[in-house]
Length: 293
Image (cartoon, rainbow, N blue to C red; front, side, top):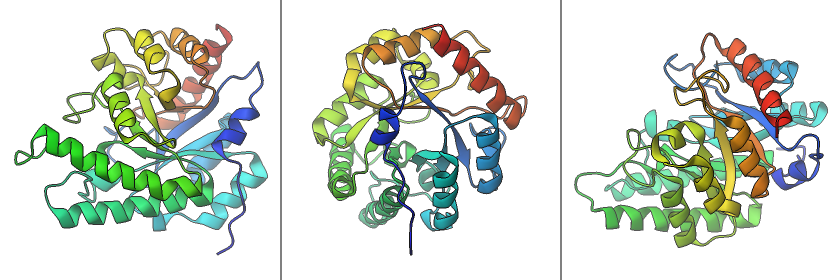
């Protein structure tokens, strides 16, 4: 299969001028999900990409259930011709829909999850992007201690980072609040796992919605995590598009600039009042916030 080479995330970041510090993306599910899921665009990927490009976004974040479902040649060709990118590959559907988990007490489930995650890494290699490790890490089974859960996750992430490194693919561990996952809820806790794995291609993924729940001081958490931050989600604390519920995104952006982050900011938000309107208003507000830095 011939794949048109795309720019790496590092190449994309290098292209950002002083006037445009970040590149903006939207998390889009190629599955038709419930309107209660935080994906403003769902279903047909071609339609989602066309919408995002027409609105002025730089990239799409792919939320996919099966890496084989992606039309690689078409997507790579579209990106090449339209100065568009894939900001990251989300793997949460592997847990929520396929019931795979990196920390399952069942050894075969763990093996199956590792194999599937390597398929996501292969896809990320083709598309020159990174892979998100979110809910696919699983929740704590009653039969597991926190120590065993942590060790299963460390082993899995170490293997996956080793697999991804020669492909120049980064993995980012999302800090997800306590009512979604059992452990590694705060930015500091996710950072501890990144330090424990100690791989150059393993970083922290922050999300303002989860941070609003977990962090006593969002700005302090960002600055303490510093260069370990590799990917960013923006949404309000009520999961709507940025700008409608009071989070100070200008200060969050200012803190990201302070630590030297110049990568993607992706919107992972509920499709309200509808998905396209949320994408449009979200991007307008992102540009406004960036202009206030």
